[in-house]
Amino acid sequence: MLATARRVVFGHTRRGFASPSALQRLLSSLAILEQREGKLNLGSLSTITAAKKLGGPVHAFVAGSNAKSVAEEAAKVEGVEKIVVVQNAAYEKGLAENFAPLLAENIKKGGYTHIIAGHTAFGKNILPRLAAMLDSQQISDVIAIEGENTFVRPIYAGNAIATVESSDPIKIITIRGTAFPAAEVAGGSAAVEDGADPKAESPTEWVSEDLTKSDRPDLATAGRVVSGGRGLKSKAEFDRVMLPLADSIGAAVGASRAAVDDGFADNSLQVGQTGKVVAPQLYMAVGISGAIQHLAGMKDSKVIAAINKDGDAPIFQVADVGLVGDLFEKVPELTEKLKSS
Image (cartoon, rainbow, N blue to C red):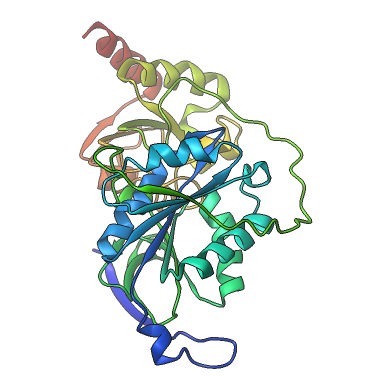
């Protein structure tokens, strides 16, 4: 059973405590959307869902080289009043050194009280710098919103839940995408407005990136996930056993940290406390013992199925369905049956 903790974080400014007039500003939220090469990251629409729970006007923000086309798509989300867009290739890669000043400028211009981004690599990269610039305490990995000042977040790898109160005039929040469903791109007609572009100089230069491309569903948003662990013994066996299983049910592929550390799978596939947090309809754990760090990333899955030769493995304590046996025999057999059905 989860323990419940409560702590209070008091707001402040560089000159002292926030004035009552600042705290009495009308609530308004800015949801930070993610995009890549002119395509909206649909998972980031969870920020709009979270912003709606706060009440008050909801605006969204997007920046990049083809940001206007993304803004026009996001404008169709119901409940959003305005999309603030900055079209500039300098912000395409989301470098914190220039993206944070860009956000700070538009936050001051719009007078927003709540800034919400996903608890993703993008959000975790930019918002801490933004929070420092605005002299606010960041509230990370929020899983529930109880009020405009009160938020719920997991601590100790999800073994305890903290209810956090903030009196900072501007709340800087990252939300766990699996806790807030992505808003649907339908029914809305938000205005699209050009934002302020401070053109801040960045000491950082984007050099290159090496992306792992796959035709399979995205791990973070997939409805079905099959994950492999150290029990698969090698990368060759991981690919031989796990990939056909994933393809047989149209699932995304994940891996435990042990499997990633041993080179069985790319680190972009890691599920767990230091990897991605997923909550699919079906999560199948193959050869995964169930360390607490891994459970922190998948225990909210609707149905958990586990295959492991060790009947005492911790994974079976959270699994809805379990099969004790040799995965090198059971998984190929299961894959063939799934394909034939």
